[in-house]
Image (cartoon, rainbow, N blue to C red; front, top):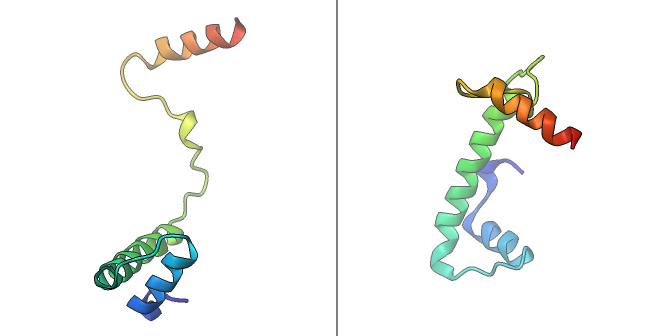
Length: 77
């Protein structure tokens, strides 16, 4: 199902199916939020990360070398 097809009634049905019953006045905002999330995820799926290493491979900040040595020490203990 595309995000454009999600009606407030369908959003309510999916929420109820997930065990999250919604009040009637919440159906339209939940459907709109789901459509927005779907549009963002669609863009992310199109990105080509190629050879990008996973997040744990990155070290941030000036003391990254110190933290790396500490982690090696902790792993050896």
